[in-house]
Length: 361
Image (cartoon, rainbow, N blue to C red; front, side):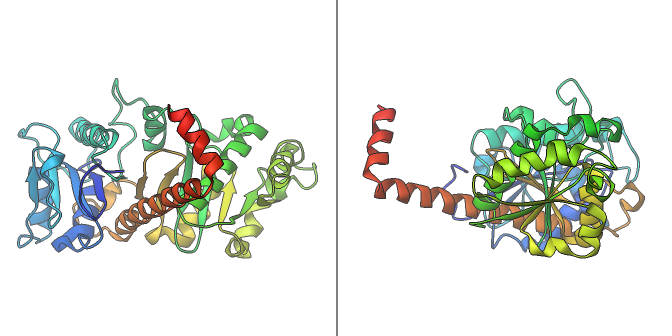
C-alpha cells in the first residue's frame, strides 16, 4: 500500500508504446480529471509526447501537472512523471519504432521503482509491443512474466475480469504446441489456489464457485479424444474439492460458453490463452480488464493491445482503460478491508495473538 497520507489510492499508469493507442485511451479516461474523485492518477511517460496527443484530440483546455518525483503528487490533478530526457523524437502513430519500445520500458521501470518503494497503491499498464520493448532488462513475453520475476512469484495468474465474466488461464504466453506438456496437476492446483485467494481477497467473494475447462475437444470424451482430463485435470479438482472448495468441471469449452454456463460461477479457469481469452473478449471486450492475480501488488491493464491500425486517429475506445483504473481501485479497497478483517480476527483470538507476539520477539 502507498505510504502517502492521501485518502484516495495513488494509481501509477504507464504510457506503454506511445505510437499505439495507449496515450489516447489514458488521456480520454482521465480527461478533465474525471477520475480524481476516486484516485490520484500518475502517468509515467513523457509530458511532451502526451501533450502532442492532447492537442491532437482538442483537449487544450485541460492541463496535465508535471512532477519530478512521486512525492510531489497533487491529488486534484492528473500528474505526469517524465521518465526519460526530452529529445527530438516525435510520435509516429501506427509505426513500430525502437524509440517507442525504449520509452515503454523506461515508463515501466520508473513506475516499478515507485511501486516497490511503496509510493503507489496500484499499477495500470497501457499496451506494449512485445517485440520493440525487448532489451537486456526485459526479456519476457509480456507484463505478467516481467512482474512475476520482479516480485519472485513463480506462478502468477493471468486473470481477465469484468462484471459478467472472470477467466484465468493455466498456461499464458506459450506456443500452442507446448500447452499440453505444461498442463500438470500441480500447476492446475496452484492456479486454482491463486484464483480462490484472489476472489476472496481482491474481489470480496467469500465462498467462490469456480468452473474448470477441459483441454481437449468435448473435454476428452471419456478418454476418446485425450487423456488429460481423466489423468491430470480431474485429480487436481478432486484435491481441492476434498478441502471444501467449490470447484466444478472439467467442462467442454465450446458448449460451456455457448450455453452461458459461466453465469453460474464466480470465475472460470481455462487451460490455455486463447481458450479463455477468445470467449472473454467476445463477451466483455470493451469493459474487460487484465488483472494479474497472485502478486503482492495490484496490477491491471486494459483488455486490448497497441491497436496500431487506429492509433492517432482519435478512434480508440477508452472504456477498458477506465475499467482497469476502476478495478485497480476496487482491489486496493478490498485488500485493505481483508487486512483489517484479519487484524481484527487476530485481536479476538488471544492464543493467535500471543503466538504472533512471541514470533515478533
